[in-house]
Length: 113
Length: 118
Image 1 (tube, rainbow over the protein chains, first blue to last red):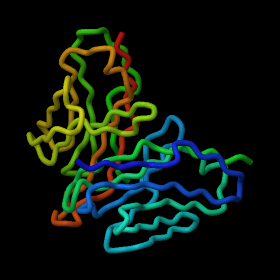
Image 2 (cartoon, rainbow over the protein chains, first blue to last red):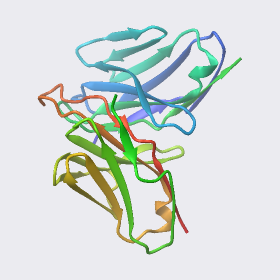
Image 3 (cartoon, rainbow over the protein chains, first blue to last red):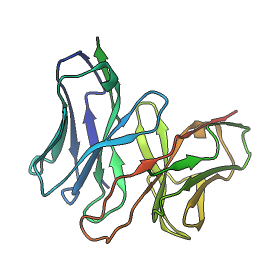
């Protein structure tokens, strides 16, 4: 089955710096890659997603890049703010046309004021 | 605005008890999911349902069963609770849409139920 590896598991950055979280997936048929943010004590919420027919997607300070050949995708957060502190999960669809996702183990991002 | 609710935020049960976790969504989503969240292990899929009375096993179905009698409601059942089932349980729902190769859509999560089995 699909395997999603996520790195790093923890990340600390100074406020205003950039943060990058990387994920690799194993199933070359995966075609949907969402990123979820989970603040402490709250539910995971989608912050950005990308489909395999696109190489990059941006939404204000957040961007995701996808390299299908290498089977990896990354989340980039620029100009980090304290409210960006949370656990971030990447995920990949279980093949094309699957409603199910396989999640990475998560990255705890701390933004230091 | 999608709303996914779960019956309890916190639950304490004894070993061997039968436990029911309820999830309700109000957006007419066809797909519903139960996940288990443990520190350092991320979100692991227990069961998935794509329609009323339809279900598929996820990655860790052992010790669990599910019920979906109505479209908006998806129940997770621990037949005989054990201490290793102490965890955070998250329910989610998503659209089914038209299917096909681009079938995956955003999953909306409930607030979670923190279950402690003693």
